[in-house]
Length: 475
Image 1: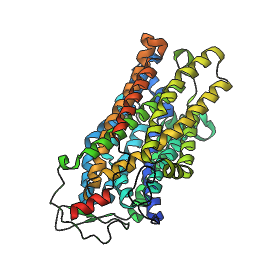
Image 2 (image 1 turned 90 degrees about the vertical axis):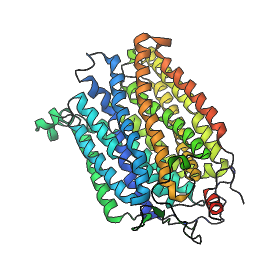
Image 3 (image 1 turned 180 degrees about the horizontal axis):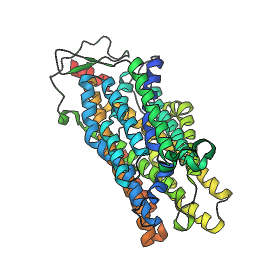
Image 4 (image 1 turned 135 degrees about the horizontal axis):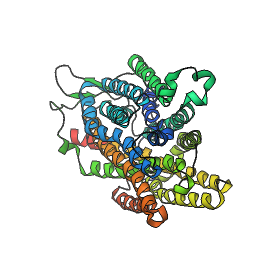
């Protein structure tokens, strides 16, 4: 039976059991990155406002905060493809360990930075040394097959959502411990000098623990040939157990041979989804933190962390228990298109929340609107599982799965570098120039969402069958 949009998981009658022990370790390693990226959101706007770079003008905070949030992805874009291609030849595990070390080091540096350029350098360090996202997706593809790929890929957004819960909660509740917890931290001047070090240190400690866990227990999924510079995948699934290994050329496959039409289609759609998502994520803490008269809600960092954590918690629960049945019922493309559609009302709710807060203050209506936005966010997050499935299926063959994910992650890094800087700068520009009453940024985001919806028309109604294509190539 050919896998179709309506029956994406029926290529085999019985799903292959997932290797849960290895998946658990891999997913714990993945948790380090969302925690490291999300922990700064509750306090980064306040941190920037305390630096002597805004001149005391809160309307300028968005420019600098957006730049700091984007720098990780700017620098990651320069290196993530090389990390992923390297993992095809030296193995996934060495690259993962390097990435975890880089995250740990950069978080310590970020927590102890008291200047704008110190913050910039620490975020650049994190991006340069971290290529884990693409490598983790490659390992997930190698630990699953067509019968359990939806179940496996659905776990990745769950982990990201968990990090999106824990990270903001840590950032909100552990920032400025010198004043918040005087009986414990008030005796040490260190915490007064470095008010945002504690949440960063906690995340760095988790990265170090993940490094130790991966070093001791994570098994390599790529067999590295000692007599060649190339590698062939040792996939722990039943996809190709009876297929003889195909000779591989020495060195990496040229990028032009990896960039097939379907790879380009999958990467473009994945990139547009990631762009809209990161733009929304950057706007949320800025909108929550800004005073009501400046177009926001005026929440404190702990409340911001609680709100962002609630979004992540709801999304994680939904992905864990609901995504697979929904995917089985509606298929990859319908779920992905629905995910893109949710951005229209999500962006529209920002000015509506501020409008109600201007006239009535923070009341029940504000929290209802926030709750509705959270529900839409949960539905949107399903799109990432579908995007992972499209990327995995689009890979020309398993030998270049790492390179394919590396290309995808390079594109994602580029758009995630642009997204925060663009959305937060447009937020500040909309306020400074009073364009459309300060709502110009949301109009732009809705227009970009319409463009993303158009791009989904190029996605196939039938998911690509990578395994079948590989068998045809081997013949």
